[in-house]
Image (cartoon, rainbow, N blue to C red; front, top):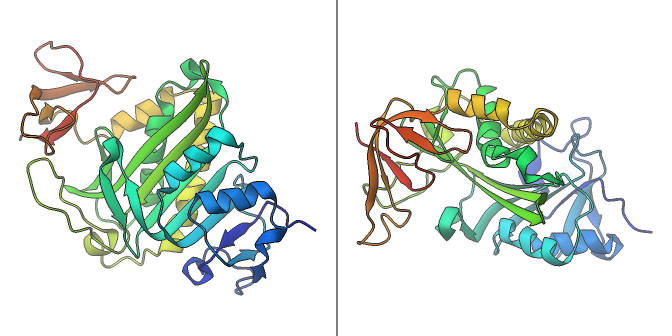
Length: 319
């Protein structure tokens, strides 16, 4: 008999205590992977799951159909899901997976980063199956806004987190979260969206300093008086992601854009926008500099002086 698909699968149940518990007791049992459906087994392998797993028999938090958590993943879970979706449909969506630690993870433009212990590394899969013009850039704004929604529930952070164009989340001037959105289309329809989210919960990454590197920080470092655990923020982030996705499908991208603009930390700031390769290549050029006046619905920036809106580039603060 195959195990039903609406469940949580993990090889590190101790890391999820406080998230997946029933009556104070974690309802885990050993899982015979051969009893999982073929689709679930392939998904488990695609997100880096190896060897033995344990499952919890309780409904996943609505509307999530399935959640997988690996202690360590040697593959980018965003890439793993994208590759799987090229050849195989994942029926249990919305779907989420996370890795406690990992290698070969990356952000925009393939910039590598390591998934460090104590931080949250979540990948969410939605299947909107809607025309691209109905969604606009809502799927690009959705993960950053969901991170803000989750952090806003810790009302004693001391300062409001804000979005640095395009998709970094800052607490003060320190980067505590980054996101990446990848879509799979068929014709003019967006069938799937894979959202990768990293939040520095307990560990501040060690990054080389430089003009194009936003100083990193962690929630534990910047808000040491608040008990923010990985299971707690995971539950709040999953709830926020689901609400923002439902908002996008029901109302379109307008409301998300309004919130994105309201929570931006670049409007009114003097900035420089460089080519994407800035910090990686010596020949990268400055595109434009000035004060940000507006963020348009396509997320392009309008700067003072009447220049053409800037749609891409690497932004640094110049004030």
